Structures are given as C-alpha cells and as structure tokens.
Image (cartoon, rainbow, N blue to C red; front, side, top):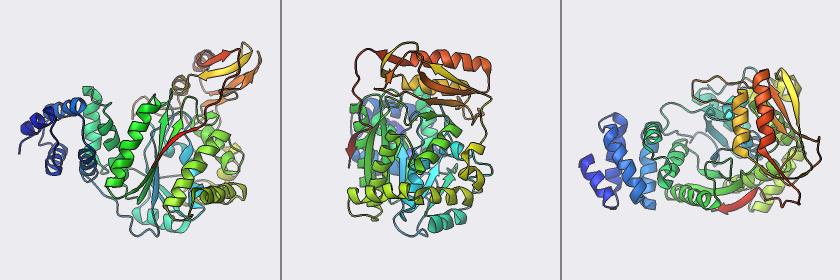
Length: 434
C-alpha cells in the first residue's frame, strides 16, 4: 500500500477502505507522508466526495491519532454539546449548569476562541482565579460531585485533525462537507462522551450561510456519531442576528448569569431549553422532550441552575463573590450608546459585521497568539423585527480605546438595516436532525 496508489484510487472516485484510511492518517500524523501527497488527497476528496462509511472511518482514525479520554470513572451517561460557533454564543455557560442541575454528567473539553470573541474558556476566565488547567482526577471528581467540569483541550487530542486542518487552510480544501464533519467530530469522539448534541448555526454570522448547507453538515455529523455508537441529535439554530444581546466576553458572562436567574433574552433561553431537552433525554433523566423542558425551566426559576454554575466556577478556582455580584467584574473605560438615525423597523442586522466590530474593539483574536480584552464588546438594544424611532438606542459599545470606539460606532450604525414596514421574526430553532 502506498499513498500514491490511494490518491489515484480516490481520484477515480473509488471508496477507500478503513485500513487504507488508517494507513493514510497514521502516516501523515507521524510525518511519513509528506504535505504534497496529503494535499493531493484532500483535493481528490473535494472533487469526488466520501461515502458515510469513509467519513466515519476518517473521523475515527483522526480521533484515535492521539489521546482517547476514558471517562468510565464518571457515573452515568456522559453528555457533551458542540456549537459550530456564532456571534454572541454564550450557550455553554447557561446550558451546562442547567442540565447538570438535573444530574446529567457534563464532562466538557473546550478550546479558546479564534475570531470575533473568546471561547468558553476565555469567558470563564473573566472570573478571578478560574482555571481549566485541572488534573484528570479533579475533572472526574468535579463531574461526579457537581455533575459538571470544563477542561482545556490537550495537545494530544486528535492531533491528526490539527495537522490536517492547517494543511486544508492553505490549500483551498476547507469547504468539503465530509472533511468539515470529520474535523469537528474527531475531537468530540476523542473526548469520551456517550451522547453528543450539536448546535449547528445557520445564517449571516455562521460558518454555514444557508439552511441547506447547515442541514447537510448536521446530517453528516449525526451520521458519523451514530455509526460510532453515540447518541446524537443536531439542532439547527438561527445566526442571522447575534444570539441574545451581549457580544464580548464579560458582557456575555453577565448575560449568561441573568439567564440563569430566569431573566435572559428569549432567543437564548429558547435555544438552551431546546438543546438541554435533548441532552436530558439522552442522559435518561427524562422520558420525553416535554418533561425535560419542564424540568429545565424549573431549574431556572428555582435557582438550582445558577447554584450549579456557582459551584462549578468555585470548584475550578473562580471567585464566588464575582459570580454572586457580576457587577464587580472588570468594566471597559468607555461606555457609549449608538443612536438610530431614522424611524422604522429593524429588518436585518449584519451579524458577521457585529462580530468584526467586537474583534476591532479587542474582544477576539486574529491569531492564536493575540491577547484578548475581556471587558470590551457591545450590547444590542434592538433586534430584528423591533420598531425603532429616530434617536432610540440601537446598542451600547464598551471600549478601552477612543479611536476604536469611534470606528465601532460608525460601523455599527451601518450594520443595521431599517425599513418602513413590519418585519416577520424568524424562530431561533430552524430544524432538528436526529
């Protein structure tokens, strides 16, 4: 077996066997197969595609290229959630504690954000002392005791995916459905969960811009997970406007805490209740989605979700006082409103541009080496479908640099499209794939 022969085989549109895929991924990870040959293979896959069986085998080969986490010491069914990423996506901060408060084991590996805002870890590090650099023993103990822990991804988790993605990024082979799905799912399978619930974003602020592409990606990932023996479901959620109102790390943390107290934005609450219902049923803590939803809603009303969040943050070194009094978290130097210059109805918010504004202010990373300003960002006061009058506050910008603030205000006004007629509001949940 040689890589040359495998490239020719895939170029002809033939199906690669599991043995051939394992040979290819193992050889490339170890450095025995050069970049130029793997680039040729990636391009052949882009043109010829992969069968569901090939995609599953590729995913498992990448997952098994490094550490496969053993979570058998954690009691019960382990449930994980993955989002394809969006603007204002603070879902895990609310969802994890909600489902954990019902006794669901949430053992989550998370990364840092690269793009318009930080990742889950960056947001949680808003709390003084919080760390995800915890031992495996502490991780397992916290899940057994609190039902929730979040650790940073290790360098040995699916190293083949890291190496392959870097190659695809510079060879024009990123946007192939099997390659996207296997990249995401290899890390999820290596993380050891028994059930995986996916939040696949669709729209302007998402990686997948159309509902058709989002459904195709969701179906591919659900298929991979099921073939690998996992319980799976994918919720396709709207990203044609930011999720909730806050965009920016500490601002999103504060909004998550409001939501855990039952006072959050309705779109965020609806999304976490939907995702959470599938997680609770997968963990066999409820028989139906309706029963699960009722239990989750009660956890917000009676304070048990917030109490679990507090215990989780404190268990990983975070400051309890800041959780109880989020107004004590650091704030930006400048806080200024952006006013609407016409009357009408909000027809569209350029979601990707809102993300870029957050990045401009310093709320995200352009490279993995970039530093991040946890205090900056923006809070939207008007969302799609809202009626506005000239002079109304569209949003409030939090900044630490006067020049960046001025640019952000100008760009934010242009990100809103105001029309004369009433605008229909899209539901946050666009589809469900099971």
